[in-house]
Length: 249
Image 1 (cartoon, rainbow, N blue to C red):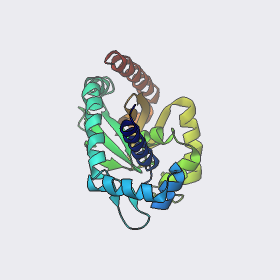
Image 2 (cartoon, rainbow, N blue to C red):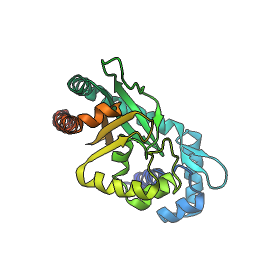
Image 3 (tube, rainbow, N blue to C red):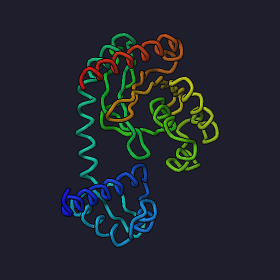
Image 4 (cartoon, rainbow, N blue to C red):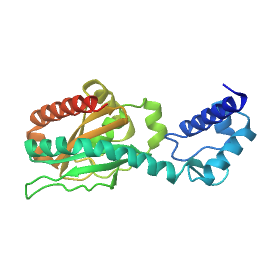
């Protein structure tokens, strides 16, 4: 490898390190924090950050507010289109089996992003739409995604004071206790926590493109009455999806 090629590889490696260090940092980081985290000179970090900001790969908001930029988010959304396309038929089949709404979600900062939804055919149904954002701590899918983090990471991401959407919304201590159970079982529940009268059961979907979650959502009394049946359907669907995804590689 020539000196010039080696220098180019080093720059790419440093850029990648900077971008990865900002992952999950909703409030952003300062130049000094990024430099310390990656063991790089502050002047080097400033030069690379300025170049990335010009391409909208980073955003700079004041002294301590360097965050991932809009161009990077657009690229991430395009990569998620593949997951949505491949998952669509499985989600439709799951909705047909359960007769409830089914949603595919991912983590977006400190919120839950709905990537795709298949609405229940029943007159009384819950209708979340693709592109909408929901809370992480009060939804089944959100809890599944949070379960991949350590408790300290959950507290840093959400803060210690959680918004109470209903009387059933969990405070942080109860949420952390429930996340331990989600890690053990792989199943998350929402029992009137995000919206009164709405319940959900979710399961994780770990792919080569990242962590996702699939949830069955409906009136809480219907979800509660059929909990075992819905959990079994979710597990079967998850297994079928992962098997199909592996064959696409």
